[in-house]
Length: 144
Image (cartoon, rainbow, N blue to C red; front, top):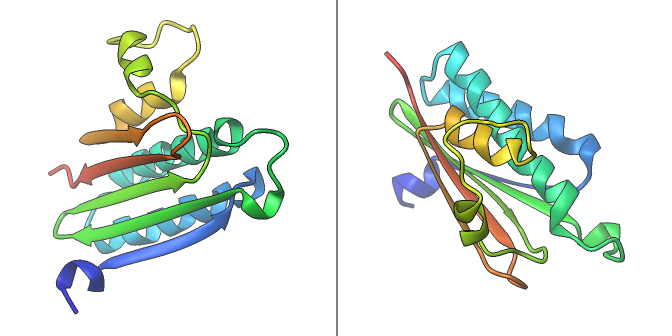
């Protein structure tokens, strides 16, 4: 078994708001294992919560059966860093739309979730396309 696999936790959660706290708690535990500070852990929990909230609010059409609304959370623990992936099998979107609407600071006009994710993590990558679901990959490193 590779060390990456041995240090990866995968959770599949129902894509409903009442399970967002489970995602935050699991993230906090894994981030503590990676050696992040309390402040770093709290920042990451907010970022993961925002990514999961986007799944709940935007990933699935209203007609999607609740059993088909899932959030896959993957956390890979490294030394002094953690990579968290939030993935869905929803409708997807064009990430270039986020770049076109990109801002360097929050101006109060929607889009706070991705802005927060970007501000609270060391790197973020969004993989998506219309009809293909979405994966948000965040890396948080220990601040020293």
